[in-house]
Picture 1 (tube, rainbow, N blue to C red):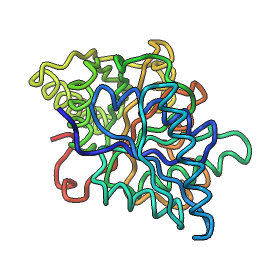
Picture 2 (cartoon, one colour):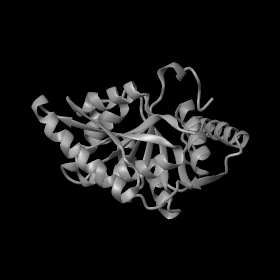
Picture 3 (cartoon, rainbow, N blue to C red):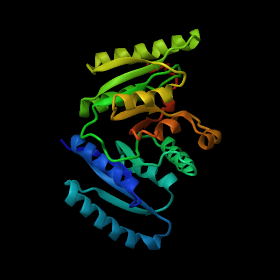
Picture 4 (tube, one colour):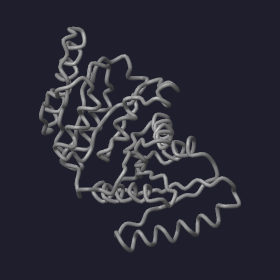
Length: 273
């Protein structure tokens, strides 16, 4: 059955956007949904030329991969128009290519984070071609913070389409307050996945930083995806110096990362409850 909600892919004719499109093509086949490429131009006079270039690109992609994306070309800004299109199309999520943090590329990572946290829909951020045909192993970090219900809902979504197994990762602590919150969050996640008949393992990681250790573990098991939630009300300091999300998104192992933004109407819930 066709899915009327598309996947959005920001497109700038770069190698990174081609990576994102290949991931989208792999997922769209499983989900039976459309892909919509969004290309932004600075001036309206550039739209016609860019549209011809887009048509050539999508025809070439269809010939090679058997999937023909739709596309739209708009004058505007990447910061506002990606999320405007996501809302207008009622998109499932967006898939975006980005650089890791290397020198000045750190600022590229910051811009990517700024775009991501402005969206109601999740983003899947990629740095390379798909390594596997399916999404079978998903690393799911669990910490002491209030985490939103959507993270588990999206875990169920990924499982239903791809049959993924989830690895609930945590780091132990001597702080009894934090320990209690971690145990509570883990129990709620465990009960949810069990109730939905979703396969999972609970993994205790060694170390002090859940972001760093989750990336290492994802590399160790050759995970297909890391699933995280973003920080509410992220500050400019975080943009410039690196929020924990930015560290995961720009992981040097180039593992795809699904970022889920907390809904403000669910903040009354503790943990995943």
